[in-house]
Image (cartoon, rainbow, N blue to C red; front, side, top):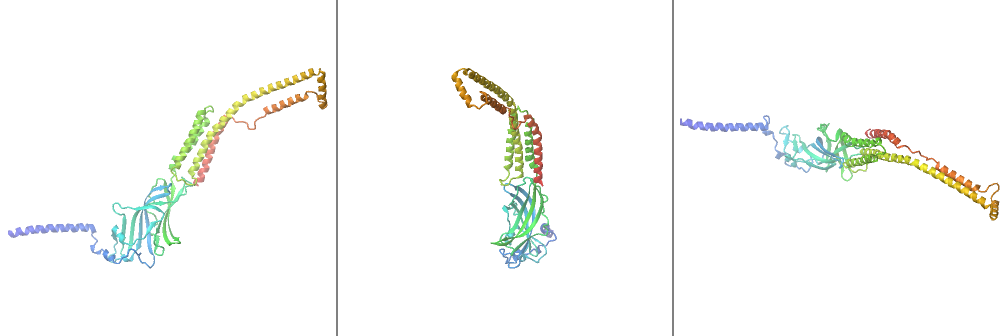
Length: 454
């Protein structure tokens, strides 16, 4: 009995310890995998012995081939004012470094991102980037994998604001081409060669992007070597993608209000000419509203020297709105001219009759005074001398009478002279404007849309 009392507790303790050991080994097995043995892991300290991260692989020999691949995560913002776009990409680079090859196994080794600081990396940079940053939440978004033959896969997540030169001549019916240029900063083509990965036949994630103002219609990959006289030849990879602007928002916010303002200015053609406050206020209101619309639309665009398609359309609408206001001024002037012409003609006729009566009266008084004076001898002598100076056959007093007739005829010819341009009735001008203005605006719209969309 004493023997059993000693043996049983010891057996219980051993069984408990064995259970804990088996459970711990099962946890380790779930962590490392059932088909993976821990002994295959290479000794990183042995791999890094004599490794110089300041020198490229195979220095002094052929250049290092770096395969590049890009996956677009998002295009966050495209700005016409600053001519730039913001893009988040996964940049993957792959090259071979024989100094890190191992023959323990044929399995790929995934390393911690902190191991990157011990390796040689290609000095790739974004040529047309204005700013860029790495992501570090919750840890640095870097991936590195090492294959037995020394091939290294290095992947990083980058968000960059990249410059994009835009031609806004056809804005908002324009199509833009933006680029993402990758180049080696310090290594020339004698030390490093870039090429797109064989699997990079398309950009993953680009076809799923939905942008607010643009649609990606096409993209392509380019490989070139840039020649700089002072530094040498450097390899460059370019991603070029075509952007087509979505026109729906501009039609709703700019084009349709402009068309409605022009149509509103035509309402004055159906308002009576006597309603001066109504027609003037309507014309001035449409002109000022069109001006405000032009200023608000231009505030979101860069102050470029090129004339944009939207500016052309705004000015077309502005001219038609202003022409409708000028049309009323012209019609109102013609109405006043036609109304004031009749009384002026009567006054002129009365004045002409009175002047003719006065002139004939003066002529009669002259003849009467001459007949009375002829009875005086002194006057007869003077009259004879006066008659001797006149040419024969001309009766006395005929000169003044004829002069009076000629003057009256000249005056009558002046009063009867008709104006060169016959004034058009105000109502007639309005009737013509109701047809001419819409027809001209429709014709200009056809020319505009054909010119900027073809």
